[in-house]
Length: 500
Image (tube, rainbow, N blue to C red; front, side, top):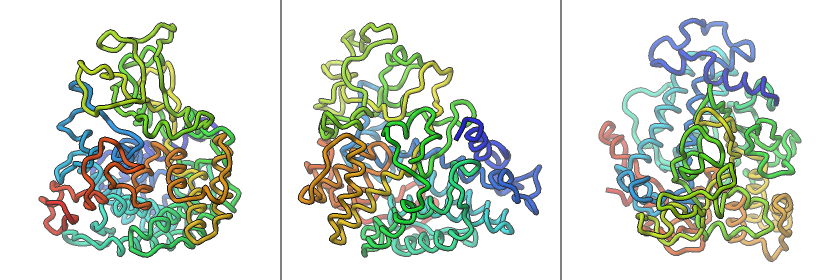
């Protein structure tokens, strides 16, 4: 996709009808554009669907719910920075409570920004079969997030009335599957072009694959063959390919990737929010990349996970490690006047200026290429929500679960070959190795928590795949609590087990 087509995509999905995304949807959402008879062209349809997608961009922030609760990363406290009432420490320690602010924000992202917006849009475009189908598919993805993070959740549709009560997880699972299957015939077959950034038939199949992959968690009965079938549709379509260079999927101009099945379009000026580099880099990294403002010195990865990559694994280059220098080649200094060194070895998650590892501890995130010399703190990289590599790994795992080790090896070794690491033998195709490989391939793409729960490793204190700073190993942490703030306004919501 060239820049012009990407520009169309993000404008269509966020700004063509700014009135629709910035006003109360209880009011007339398309005040200057009549909905009757509107939506018959690709541009008009994109405009109708704009609010459903523009709000999805917030997921690049909420992805921390899937990563900093795991072995992949954390947000340590450095002096006064990033304490925020203990919220970030409690994520990695698994010590969150029912009033944890960022978890409440995630609930709001799903139900207010997502489900609520889409329900209203569906009623406004009820006569447009294609628009309704696409909206149902987007809503299904929001519900996928809801059952993954919260378990039993309210099931609210455009036809719902009255206060919502908590619906069993398995019932919402069935709803998601039904919505996607019924929407499928009316979704687009087009990949890229004017359809870039939107859900098409193959995107819907990928959501189904994710649903089926975790069926044992969500409804208590695995659906490995259904996962394989959905993955086969995507892979055998021939419309996506593994990019030869792993990091090209996250480049500033990653809209040209043939591997990204669903990407959320960003533009540093007109569709902002892609600012992962600001969350991870040190304040003085401003000099290294000629950034307009100082980064915030937060998100990082520590030795336990970093060292799981072999020295030949090209994916290790997603991290920024070692001594840091300015654009002029001079060593950068931390606030204590010491040479700044992004060192993976971290012994404490709550540091003061007296600690030798104070500001440099933890390697930083460079997976999304850092855009140098910009005038704003946001970037142009698009968020890779689904990639073909993940579809291969999902199929490989499912084949293994059904006893087809040889078939599973083909998928996993395709990904390992691209990473520059040796192929596995059948004896090396084990659950532990598969989980580790998924971690290396998909780190910081918001799938680690999902994987650890499915493999039964998420809540093991001192486990092979859990953070050294994790303190709480209770089964309750397999789900986040229903935020108390939401229960206060809706008594029909039942709290998840183990939470007061």
